[in-house]
Structure formats: C-alpha cells, structure tokens
Image 1 (cartoon, one colour):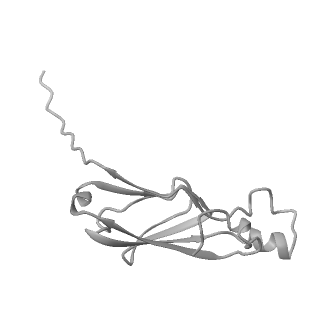
Image 2: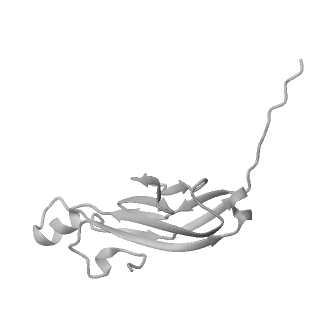
Image 3: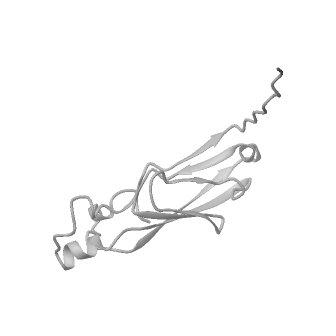
Length: 130
C-alpha cells in the first residue's frame, strides 16, 4: 500500500505513471439519505475515482471533489482512487531537462481525503403577488 504523500519522498523520485489507493468503509442506511461528497484534497496530477467497481469520475484540476450519490450502499463499500503524475519525474532523473521546474515532480495523493455528508434541502419559490 502506498501512503498518502509525495511519491518522490518515498523512493519514487524517477517514477512517472500511476498508483492505486484503495480502502473499504461502512455506511449505515441513514447515510444514504444525505448528499455524499468525496474530497481528495491535493492530487498531483490527475485522479480517477471508483466506488464498488463503478467509475465515479476523473479529476484533472482542483477541486478534486466527487459526488458519490448513487454509488454507495448500506454496509461495506470499496473506494479506489487511481492517481497519475506526469513524465517530469522520469525526465528530471533520467534525462535532466531545463523544462522540469520546481514543483513539477510533486506526485501522488497528498490529501487530506475526506467523505462528507450533507443534509438535502429543497427550496421552492413562492409565486409573487402584485
């Protein structure tokens, strides 16, 4: 398992590619009545989220938030996040380049990762009387 954080600080300074993060979490039936949002925090560079084997979406820029409504079930759920960096790490080590700038090699799921539950609120407009 890869811990949250910059891959280049985990002996992967030359790695350009992807990594899979996964976790199981449990929900009560009452959770499903709420809006459910996944916030990945900081992702370097792109992240793909799936829940229970179904793709939720792909994030290419901030905010890395995903609506999990309809993907979660009561009981155990499986969350998978695929994160991909750029070729900057490979080029920085294997083929030093003037085009790899400070911060370009930061890679991975940096977090913090949170699942948030929001109460659903419906607002209806009343007709105006003149």
